Figure (cartoon, rainbow, N blue to C red):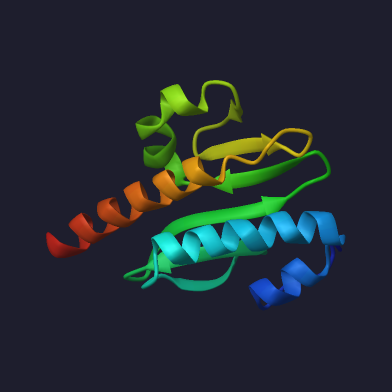
Length: 124
């Protein structure tokens, strides 16, 4: 990835990575779009992101040794037990590239976030 480059689309972001990383990112994008078909894709904080009802849903990005997945604090809190073996921050999760990427867990987190954003949207 070119750190000084400003991305304008997810496709452009994916194209900048070696094929083995791009394949992982493409699969994550597919999991997100399947779990959140109404979500709008775009670039936020210079990384791929999805919004639902104009609210942040999830973001993801590749790094040298891991894939960063950002489900906001609520996504991390709801899946604390499942995420225990990964390095996490307030709203971030690191999936090491030398381990199997947990696509099904990503799907569950996205589904949770969709429900959360939809509930919030309905109450406004």
